[in-house]
Image (cartoon, rainbow, N blue to C red; front, side, top):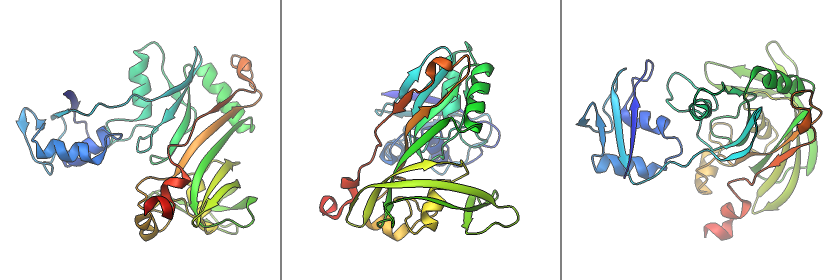
Length: 295
């Protein structure tokens, strides 16, 4: 039996069910459901129900036979850390969530260095994430990204068959920070930012396509919103896609993963990594969602 202890911070006054979902983002839903049913969640020493409202300073203890998996590390040296972020984990900390990839990296560093996020992935997007271990490395990576010397490739499952099967598409993106979503428009207008996305169809089956997608600009929700604008939303995306279609496919995950990271020309102290390519497999597959597999 594992025991997890959390202390509620300012801005985290919410139902304990939601708090634990944010604190343990990789835990399956059944884990939390079973814990509440078995009364294995305590607040300040007292067993409580899932709708109990927390307040800052509360101590939450959660007992479960499930064990949290560590964040997979793809590459590490004295300058950088490349890990594979699971879906439903925030890249950066926010006021509500007790856990993020950055907080994990800081805890893992034990004060030996201060990790810096070099870029971010959406909460629901999984994949390769690059962190620097000191300011010189962070500055080098930032300069390389600005000059287009770091390339990220994503694997996605989208609805439909893109035509043409390979293309580079441009448009403009409007961000609504309050609504936490974006809108794609075909022409420039006040507040809009240009976007450029390349895709290549790898395989198509049962009105689903597996794509390899390259970002030439890195805007918020760019791939998800741009592919939906092109008529091919990412499978599992209830925000920009079709919730009924996702439900019919039993798609309970966002099928978007950053699967390749190529480091182009880098200056010191990271010049030894020039040309390095890091790759992982996507945690989803086309076959999982085809009609034959679902029947």
